[in-house]
Image (tube, rainbow over all chains, first blue to last red; front, side):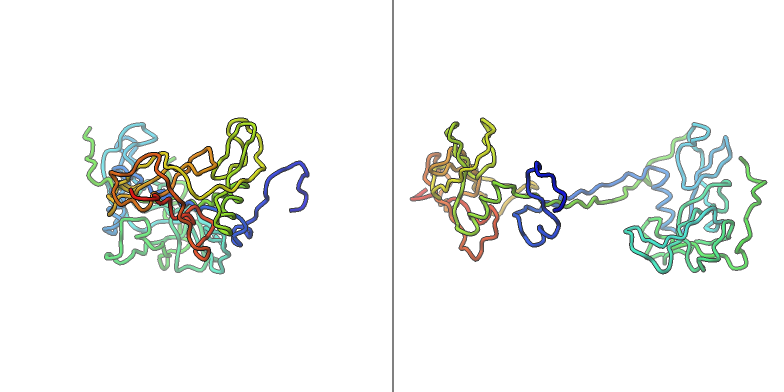
Length: 184
Length: 157
């Protein structure tokens, strides 16, 4: 190693030294497994994904239909009241073209994560998913999209039971709801 | 206000992948290379404290002096303590109980933990019994503590 201060003691080791077996080592691989309790709302949400449906929770006070569902209205500070099925169609609220994968590999075809405002849910309420079957250059905010589901037998109760959202033909570029009409 | 039943709650499984390589250190390096290459058991000596640490340690635990004097000890010693384990680390019953030994090798002042071998009758094992290290043939040695198969009781027990 260059630039090593003279006063430092010890044995500098690099990855290659371990691979060559320059020093004796003991490998330790702890088994760290966990189960995250989904709670009532997300538990039902995942169950319904298995059924090929999107479910939301309604707050009677603020009238919001919330997806993903939650048992507590963070705006009214009170429990939510009802379940409500919503559509598996929606509008692109925002998106990104990712040319690197999660483990930092270069991608020729970008992944397109997007927040999709779900039809039937309150304005601005959406879920994060991916867009597919679309030319990356033609993705726009406001684009109308529809969920593409896995075959029923392959669904596991996971957000990946939806493969991706694809554009609704003829609906590209047309906002579902004019911004001015949105409740703030 | 009716609280919904928690019937649909489920768990989401996950895993945290962690891998580590623990290096033997300077003294460990010396101990394991002696074991692998020469089939010898090496310790370090602290003269002021009259200690011989086996396996070798880089520092004296009593006076914190650096230990630079390696010493090869005989592969024979005394059984200081022993136990028979009927269960493994996951509390699963073992097919045959595993005997473990704490051994003070001749010339050492410390004890080391290893397997106890050649136990014909567990009831007859006694503290103070003489034991001898069973060291694997050179071709099978990898620089691991398991290059020593264990300590075998000498004579009958």
